Length: 199
Image (cartoon, rainbow, N blue to C red; front, side):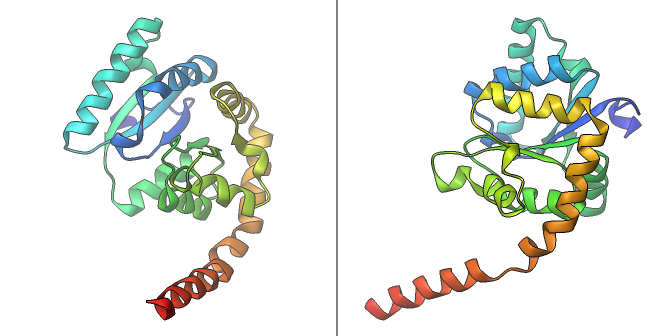
């Protein structure tokens, strides 16, 4: 990770959502986290598209207006192959779920790696994937209700290695129930069969 300027003592905060999922209304949250968790690196992923370039320009401007050094706190890294991405997850102190447009696959990958997750339960289903996973794991206390609450939860995890270790241990102990349970699959199948029978 040295090639991206991530130092061994940096708190690594992984923000793996697609670039278009990051709304301008949430820029202040990432700035607050950078301030409170320094020395840290917020790691976003850069695809070769206009959304990634737009996100980087916007965050640079927002950090600059807030007087926070973007280059000292943020890394925009290329998309990684699975092994390299999982290495980042295992190194990460906190997985930062996107707000309002949650990531199901990325959150489940964090669960596989035992990485602590902070999420925010959105109004619509698209914003509830990671929060639903956390609640299924018995970790609903890491579902935030506001920007301030989200930043508080991330800062708590960054500041307390024992707390991170305890959260990791709980994820590892409970994740089999999430990875192997099929009640939701059965429920979806039932709904689809009922809809098909009425067609």
